[in-house]
Length: 314
Image 1 (cartoon, rainbow, N blue to C red):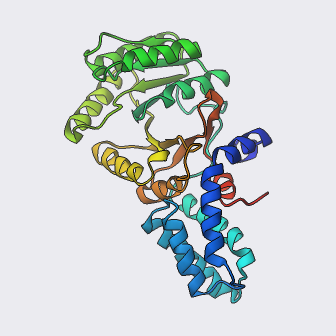
Image 2: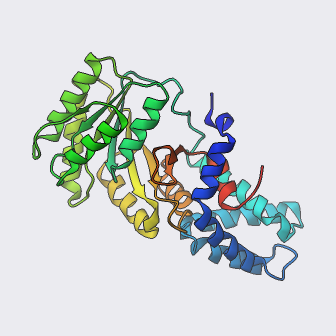
Image 3: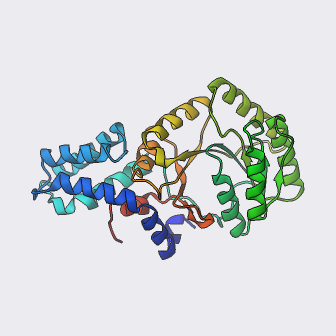
């Protein structure tokens, strides 16, 4: 079943609360953009453009959204400013659909492969929350501590594993990451695991080294699971705003990222980065982080996200 149909009141309340700061910022800027205007004219669009750019949506994505709204105004002849939020939601959500961000299956949905292997790069604390959500949905989960060079990374993952109640496969700090990934998949396969989360590089100090390391991990994993990894997930800190764009640019240049998780949206007014990053890099957003609790990690729903950000009710 599509996630769209599973978006219940509890998830909506978590989303609305998590985006509260972003919502206040975006709405106040849109409010100033249309102040004193009854119809959507060039001045309104210019002001709206500025409002979106300063809300961390990004220049390129903002221009694409404005162009779509201009086409709507031209086609419908007259659009009042009272309709602007609704049109903004529709065009932004449509833009994300075109850029390969669809409603995704919930954690309880059947997986396309078993074990389903997710290799995680970037900010890696999200792994514990992913493990929790999959386990809560009835999946058997294994974690692989393949970020063996970053200080305390293995220990940190072990703490998450203990907290969630899932096994963590590890070796000594400084061990070969590919060897850890190999051991993890062997153990997961032998124990009939459903999901395997491989913690890789929580840093990006050298693009060539990262590329070589991740390529080696992939090649070694494929000796156990021929089509692994099924997903290379980049986790970004949404609170860094435009810096998250730069992180995405560097990581996507270093490896073939196939999905995004954007976290820490609750403590910031920079929620617009979710729209801009997905659009600019043409990579689907799978998950968003809306708080510190395990349950605050949500599957991304483009329509509900944009509606919440623009404060549009169902």
